[in-house]
Image (tube, rainbow over all chains, first blue to last red; front, side, top):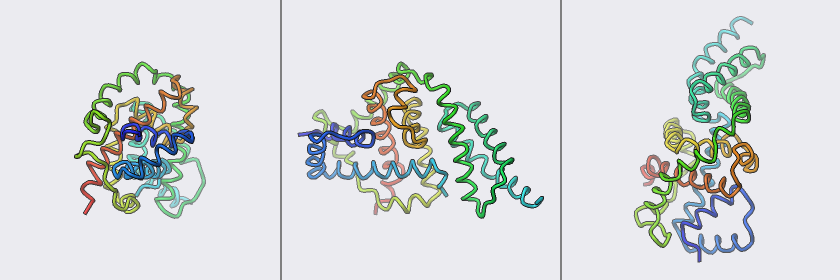
Length: 60
Length: 195
């Protein structure tokens, strides 16, 4: 079972490289039962969207 | 048309502080940032595009500036050597120690929350002030690697090559940056926004 700390590492790395099948399964299981990491994963998506917007001058 | 030129000059002056802040965040070097902005303004003044709004003008200017910044970084990437990245590590590990317990689980007080309506936040000037402050708050080299990846759109492989670090090292740095940035945003923006 992944710890939250390990899960956050994988949730970062999935933004930078394709995860292996084993990693994807371990992460999916963890996020399914862990509300904090579930939120963290959404936050990663928000960070990426924010950075894209910031980098394209689309800020108000 | 003379009046058109005058308008653009006014807009440029109004947007210049935004451009300079953007360049300083990416480059963390006031002189290099100033150069990048000067070159952008020069390119902008000689261009003949027309713009209907300040926001589309800003988008165009940022695109020019981004390319200038990418050129500068490609020319000097190795200055962000692996050794100076190591200097950032101590502070970052400290953050992880406060977020996770010994078994690597979230501490009760630091469990990530649900961020309410990020799209609405993106429309607020104040959010972006906090966002910039949080980027600025990251350790310098960590921030540079992160912004190369997420703001300037480099592929991870190219970052590794430019900076001369291994892929796994690169992933560690990016992870630390994301952990730091989301922690800062949650504390300084989203925690307050949650009902």
